Length: 138
Image (cartoon, rainbow, N blue to C red; front, top):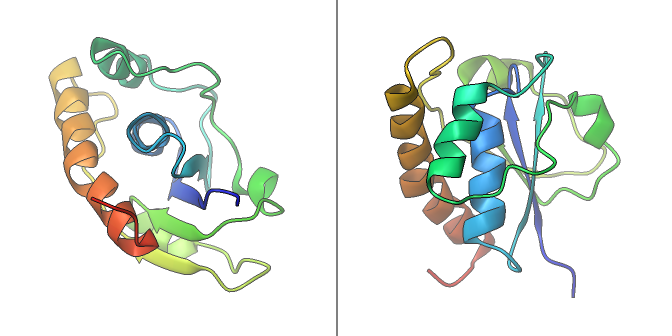
């Protein structure tokens, strides 16, 4: 039986959604497949986002900003918007899909400590949200 797929959507797909993708794939490995995209993706993942993940030994291999169009054909079971702009501009998906809005602070252009705080907030709130939404054991 395939694992459910979760799309984490943000504006730039450079900070919050990238950290969320990596954390979900790490913490819920084998139970959920996380993908991330942006409504207006940036050219690269924020270096401090990568550093914040590396500090806790979460793999950053393969992380790159992606346009939402790249993933529209993916089988998505749950969409989570992590910023207000993405919530407002979220497209209609080819099939009905459950959507949750769970905003996080944007640490872009801030110190590493802000990225660490957002990383920890994502882990504390997003992981249980996904577990509950998909009926997974907590």
